[in-house]
Image (cartoon, rainbow, N blue to C red):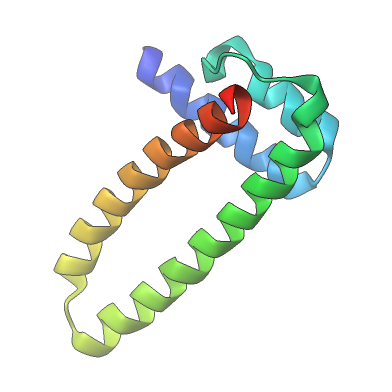
Length: 103
């Protein structure tokens, strides 16, 4: 059940980032479902900017990987890599948020 709540929290954060409303992104990051500690109001604009940039870069990487996988006809390998990449991004988001809050 906790995993489901975490997925919903990440979805809410992503939607807030896409809407580009700093207060909504901050609220999503501070929600209890997100389980993030030390999210500071004073860093709200920084969180929005940083997460939007990372999300954009992630999308560009996924497009490049998809084009590469299709051209090489290695879709199975691509999906396995994508699963690991998504796991990496989740952990990276958590580290980045922790770093922004603590650092």
